[in-house]
Amino acid sequence: MPKETNNITETINYVFTGVFICEATIKLFAFQLRYFKDTWNKFDFFIISASLSFLLIQESKLISEDMSFNTTTQVLRTFRIGRMFKLFSKLKQLQIIFTTFINTLSSILNVGALMMLLIYIYSVIGVNVFAQVKWSWPMHERLNFMNTPNALLTLIRVATGEGWNDLMNALGKPKSYLHDCEPVFSWKDYKEAGEPLACGDYKITYAYFGSYLVLITLIFLNLFIAIILNGYFDTRDQEGQVLNAELMAKFKDAWA
Image 1 (cartoon, rainbow, N blue to C red):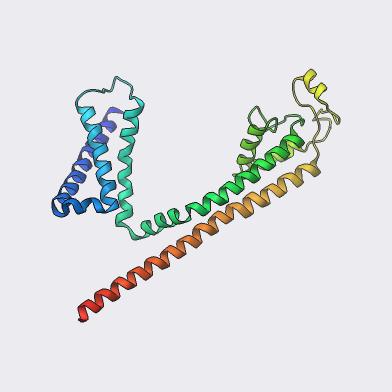
Image 2 (cartoon, helix red, strand yellow):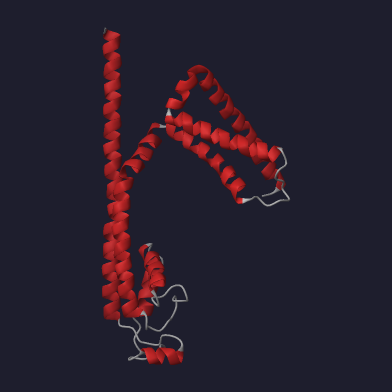
């Protein structure tokens, strides 16, 4: 960054660090040991401690602009971005979204593991079907089905929708005037040529990519959205019930 921008950023960092220190000091003075019973207070104290540690290292000139940051210092400095999580304790909607993510994490991991297993199965099938197909655009040394790792990366790219139709067309090209390939291609031929030279088959390619896109894009990715939305509505209803209970308790106390 330009030196002026870096100076402005550092000044803002000092200001907000001072504000957070004042906030933590006031809370510690008011709540004393009860301060550490709240999870958000513990998180604030950790962020402030990390920020102060970095400032002490920086001010003691253990590091300078001419020296490269070591790994520990870089990790310590990135803790400062954790201050943004304080928004969760102030904004109700962000709390609901964050709670939804935590509550649905196990379900998301289970569905994600099943999806990765399915992608792995398709990558093994792709290696057996397309490993011998001659390369043409957009295929290259990483985007192909020559081995399982490359096939996994290729199918993950296809799942994002990035140029999957071009890849499908490249793998399905038959022998033609513009596409010179071998209808029958063996391992011996590959050893002699040093590259795959077999022809593709549009029927197999369409069936392979069609079934893959239906399962991954239309089912699994939408399933993730359904899990998150279901968790969001459940969390919102629970928060509403807790709020109603608190209001009823306050109303009873006031009536008494």
